[in-house]
Image 1 (cartoon, rainbow, N blue to C red):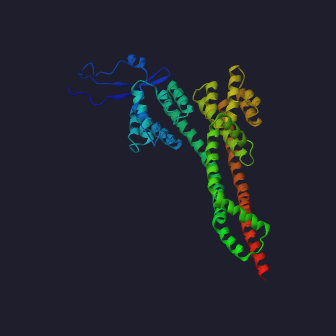
Image 2: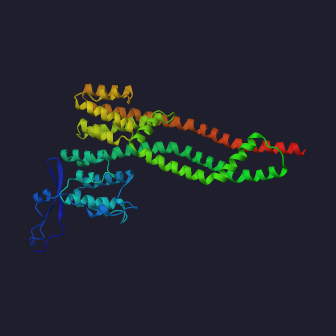
Length: 407
């Protein structure tokens, strides 16, 4: 009898975990080459994969973007639906892409961990920078219910909604940012290059200059003489701000400002409420209990103020109260949202209420984005026109002054 080919991977559901075990055909093998018993493997600590230490893009841990996670999840669901085992599907995905890609490294690491006895959800949790807590917890619920493909499809829907929200916000901000950058560059170029040329002409004529022209000349001289100091100061400020914004107090202050700032508060708040509602709905539908769902939503909501309110609400829910009551008491959520949650609790249909809340605030976000774009465009035009107009008026006033003195 010839030795059997490479071992096949089979998916076995045991209680709340999916375990991948090797199944070999009968073949003559030495005792040293046989795999360790399942009980011995379970007692041994999870082995750290060597792939974890490979450097992707200069970092120690391979990290995938959200768009790549979305694509990977959809492809994994397709392969499982086509009849592949989990090990085969991950192995197939590990062979895709470039040799040093993060997807290849992470899929190989997941395959190794599953073969060594870890569940899929635990293996995914080993990559917190790539997979959010929501991802691992939903997989855990799918392992318990045996509906892994359905859970992966819902994860795809979740990531598509989040990606759509971020795309709309970026699209709304792209035009104003580009206009502002070009306006600032134009003013700096005028102060650095054009104004000094006029200054030489005016000084050679020896005429007294109007106040706006003298102010403009002073700004130009200051930029030329101390521009390097300004650049260093701006760089230090940016580095300090980025470091401070990552601290707990900095995140809370910045996120609180976002919820109060004119024009953008409607976009930020509506996007946060919609994302929160869809996240809770996705978790509850997949069998995650309320306390765990609130904890995961707190970790993934993206706004420190709302996360703090969710943390307080979760503690009160532990005491036996409803969700809508603690959320309303926090003052961080609108009355309409908490009222709709209360109706869902009374009817015993929380998931439908969360679906309606998500759609409601997603529409609000779309309207606020349109309002923001329509309002910001004339504001930027007026600001840039004012800056360029001041430069032009200051130069023309000097020209008229010199012309009249010559006459």
